[in-house]
Each structure stands twice: as C-alpha cells, then as structure tokens.
Length: 427
Image (cartoon, rainbow, N blue to C red):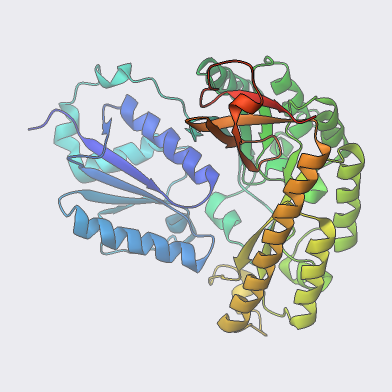
C-alpha cells in the first residue's frame, strides 16, 4: 500500500475557478494528500458552465482522462454541477455540487467514496512542510479572490446560478493574504471577483466598498502594484478613478470593462445596466484623468435579435472607444439562460463572419494602441515573465506584453529576474 494518495486538479474557465483550484490544492495538501502528475489516484475537474462550449470542453476532458488514466477516480466539481443540480455523468466517479467555500465537505465526500481506509493511515507530517499560497500565480502575478457571486442575471449568463449571491471576503483576510504574497516576492496583485465592483455591498456597510479596499491595500507597503481584473462601467466611480490616477502607477492604469454590445437595443435584451451613451461618458471621464489609460473589453457577437445594423452599430462603437483589445465571444447559451429561448437567433455562419470582422478590428486597434502608448508614455514598468539571452519579456502596467533588449535600457550588467518589475525609460 502506497503511503501517499496522489491527486491532480484540472481547471477550466475563469481566473476565479483557477483561484478556487489553488485553494483546494492547498487544502488537500494540508489534509495529507499529495499533488503530483504520476501514480495519480484522484483526478479533480473544476468545471465551467458559462456556455455550452465550456461544458463540452469538460466532457471532452473527462473522456480523455478516462482513457489515459483508467485506474484513477474522477471527481467533477465547479460551476457545471452547481448549475445543473440533477447532473449525471457516467464517466465520473463523483459529482460534487457544493461551493468553493466548503472544501471540508468535499474532502469528506472523496474520503467516503474513494479512499476511506487508506486516508486514515496517511501521515500528514511530511506534506505539512509544503508551503503554498492560497491563490494562483503565473510566476509573477498574484491573483486574489476578494469577492464571489453575482445578482445581475444578464439574460445570456448562468453565473448567478453557478456562483450564488454576492459574497465578499473580510478586508483583514484579504490584507493578510496580500502580505503573504508580498513576502513570497510577488510584485503585482490582481484583485479578482465575479462582480468585483460590488465588493462589500453584502456587508450592508457603506464604508466598506472597493474604493475602501483599494486604499487599505495601498497602505500595506510599496513593493507591489495593483491591478483590477474586470469591472462593470457603472461601478467604476470617480473615487476609484481618482485614486488610480493619483497612485503614481501603484494601481495600474488598465481597466477591463465588459461592453458586450455597442447596440442599445441588444444591451436592453441582455439586461445590461447601462446604455452606450453612459458607457461613452464614463470612458471619457477615465481618459480625462488618465489620457494614457488602457481599456480592454468583452463583446458578444450574434446575440438573438442582433441584425446587421445592430452589429454595425456595435462595430463602430468599439472603434470609437479606441479599446486596447476586444475579447470577442460568439453567442452560446444553454437552457438556464433566458436568452436561450429568445427568438430571432442568428445562424452559426453569420455569427462566425461577424466574429471574424470584430477580431480583425481588435488586431488593428491593438497595434494602434501600442503605438499610442509608446509615443506618449515616458516609461514602461515591465513585470518580467521571461529573460532569454539579452531579450526580456513581460507585462506592462497597461497590460500588453512587451519584449526588449535590456542592455539598451540599463547600465546594470545583470538581467532583470522573472517576477520583478523593470522600468524602461522611453524618453
């Protein structure tokens, strides 16, 4: 009998799912299990259900793992079973319908279903020495979930069913985790949430909100910068914008703001809480305070009822907003979303063609945005991901990746290390 039970987590979907997977990994290690890639006993699939395509990816992964590792037990968790509470999958050994704030119950489930006798004999002492942070990192950036859940119920979206109502973490817990991340050497903290802009609303205390949280985080120390992962335009208030503008780069001048459509008719059908005129006014405010701000967005193409004129309106509005990047999503919904039942659906060929046009626009705008920043900015703060030879690559404060020959910018003989911020003076 082996001493260890080995597990591996496969994560699909958003950064919040990735955070949850890292949290679960940390929890299971503390319970005495061992994370690895060989002699695997348990395969955990943390699924996404935001679209039918996302569910198909999970199904394909399950089939692949069943063939590749037939001896391992498969547990399915995440948004798919939380949305489809009567889900049955013959190829998995356990479906867990619980939420990510209750890993203890999940552990009890796998203990009962898989390895109850073996788990009792495992010594946790060796594994307890592993030091892990409760979040995800891409070697240089530290993602921290500060909020979960959503009450918006956009007609195309099932996230409120998957994630439940708004639930914010306590400020002191967030600050404690960020301090640990700083001690581990991270120089960029990415604040993440399903509905980030409504952080603190569930506390029923007007003094606790995203602006308050940002101020508290800035007080921790000056060794890192902060980035907002994604925020709604109607929740990006003047307080947050002015704090960002005055932070001297501590809060990155980059905002990912989902537009979803540049047609007011479609926005209304989507149940989005703004109009294009409001969206434009707020973007104008951002650029008044931060002329070099980088603004990226999401757009859904082919929503039911979107005719050619609506698409043209959306295309033209995106071009007018001068987005740094457009993440284009072809419409795909399932029966839990209201839009699944909407009439006037677009054909796959129409959706594909419109998506192609909008992605082409995004490519053009990305190049224009890069040229604009390089002509206007006095410096780039590059968070280094890789250094190979004389070439260094990393992510700027504006979020785009940038490669450079470090000897052209530095008199120092050593290359900047991955995970560290290197300032390139452009003027």
